[in-house]
Length: 286
Image 1 (cartoon, rainbow, N blue to C red):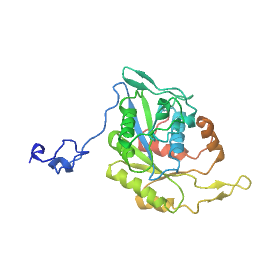
Image 2: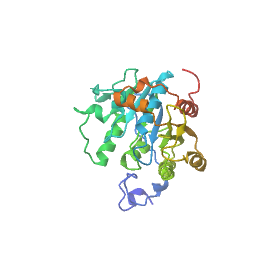
Image 3: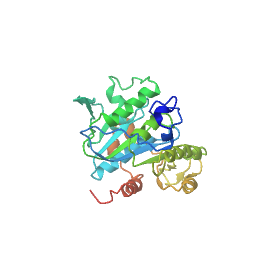
Image 4: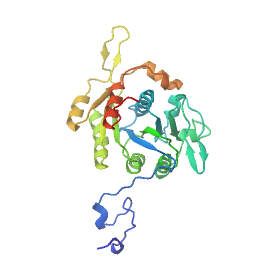
């Protein structure tokens, strides 16, 4: 039976409820880049819940990759809670040319596209419904000129709703990094993100545990303020790599608050970056 003869078929399998023969066939819903763009690798940073530090991890990945000689950009896909421009002290507005958006760059050249850079006031709330927000995130990919990008980091909003689904469906991700915290509910957090990635056939590059511990400034002892970590057993359960364990570090928080992320000095994510480079085929030094 042809799709034309199926009652109720809208010819758009992403929204159609009809039981067409092609329904079970995989569809490529990826949206094309802007004609003037070039992006080699796209990495999503995700989590099953909010407040675990996805934006911090996204920022750290971008800074470290840029320091290694790669051209790096960030899509701040958390439209209702954008924090990437603040972490980099970026206030330059997005410029337009021939119907395309030109992302402003940080001091060291990291290009960023965020809803906050489109607003007159950075503390003005974005009160939009899901489909409108998802449409804006899609435009951050299709209507933005990303020039010769080696890595484009997508800082996703939490959960498995409209916007993460839009990112997973429309942007050709090389893989995702799942950010967690050392709490008992972390297994559920990872499971949600892991199952979504699996359903969308997107590789999980590994796990990053944020707020893993606090290091005593006097004796150097690591204090597990959220209890013992379950990260290793969860990683073993899903067959994922543990990419990093990031402590609660007041210096790191202060840098983000002041917009000085590019001045960070720590080795928390060094191994994570090397693993990502290996898994994306960028193993030679730049």
